[in-house]
Length: 252
Ligand code: PTJ
Image (cartoon, rainbow, N blue to C red):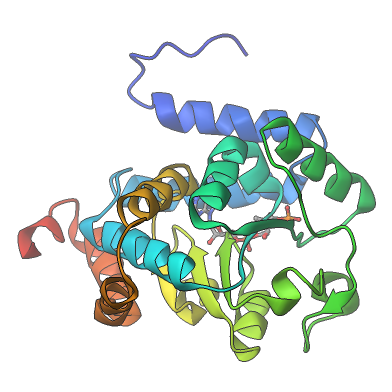
């Protein structure tokens, strides 16, 4: 599995694959994570492997939500930990958000491996291991959260979340920011802010917007939040997929 030359036309996509493979080898990413990555890649290819203008708007709205939040939390699973560990820590710092490990296929081994991996990438505290809270309406293992983390959060970032849990978190009244390359997924549809972009691009982009908005007043942040329309964002992504790479650019 030698070095990938940077000149390779699919350099970024191959690098991403490699990180997921390494994640599986290290016990961070689940084997299902490989399948999820393959699905994501197919959508990214159709989107032209770039951040759509509509996704950039969503990333700015996400940053505004996080800066306005009282108890923001970023949820991390096995794919996110393998792909963007340091970038997730930076987003947490830029928005004063907690980081919580929250797994679809929860095992103690993977919980610990991911928490350690995040700490190696600069995280101070990582939540999720206490698991003294529950999300109503989900079966036991998938309902577990930290009471003072996702349990009590007002705004949650859930990258690559499964549809059931995205809906259950929404039903708890939390503001949900979902990062998912599939605009038709139930998670993206359930989100207050659906970001149809690769987590590799989306997480640093939210951080950049948060830094840019660091000195903005509440009114400015609230107006960014109010101007964002989730249905519009999903429709723009779907159009870009159906009509090809320039469909959304033509509208700007
Ligand atoms: O680590 P765990 O146990 O919490 O498991 C995590 C996975 C992702 C395996 C689990 O949540 C799962 O099975 O997810 P799904 O149902 O396969 O959904 C994954 C969604 O994420 C799909 O809609 C993919 O298109 C999307 N996706 C995959 N890779 C990326 C992505 N979205 C953004 N960036 C990616 N790199």
